Amino acid sequence: MGLDMALWQEITVSVFLVVAGIFGLVGSFGLLKLPDPMTRLHAPTKATTLGVGGVLIASMLYFIFAKGQISFHELMITLFLFLTAPITAHFLAKANLHTNVNRADVPPPVGDRPWAGYESDDARRIAEGESTPGA
Amino acid sequence: MILTYALIFTTGCFALGLLMNLWRVVNAPGVPDRILALDTMVINFIAILVLYGIIEGTAVYFEASILIAMVGFISTVAYARFMLRGNIIE
View (cartoon, rainbow over the protein chains, first blue to last red):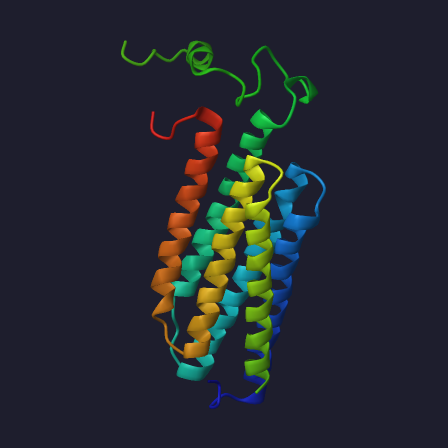
């Protein structure tokens, strides 16, 4: 494990690992500590994702330094996680908005139509001029 | 030598994070928080799996990581959609 690596290479990989570990810990701690559901969305979707990104960068550097081979699996995982984290956050925020937030507390939208999450499917189809399903 | 300590430290951090998430899953104030804790558990587990790959020095665990990332994302979306709409496939 890392015996055939130069000192600066070990230090580089270690710095990435330690920073990633701290970010991951902060993300998980924020999930416990932050006061209300919407702020709790921030910690795991930002800090923990960054932590995993750091671990993946460290892994990539390790396999380049120690084995001399470039592996693209980490890039794929990073890309996938960084694409899916905002989508997850969006879905959970929307679920939160529907279950925990009073409809009257949401700021009013501009125009006639309600916010997209609150509009029923039929009302949306009529407003956008689409045909109804099955018609 | 430095790398060994760094690996131990990072694995400890993510393991502690997993325990915090487990605590959150068991007693969460609401259903969205529980789903969020499960999603964070998946992300932390991917980190631990990659770290284990570094410790063992093999690249076998990356395929497992990709699969777990995909399954985690789809399950989170399915949970959130089930909360919103009451069913998953309409």
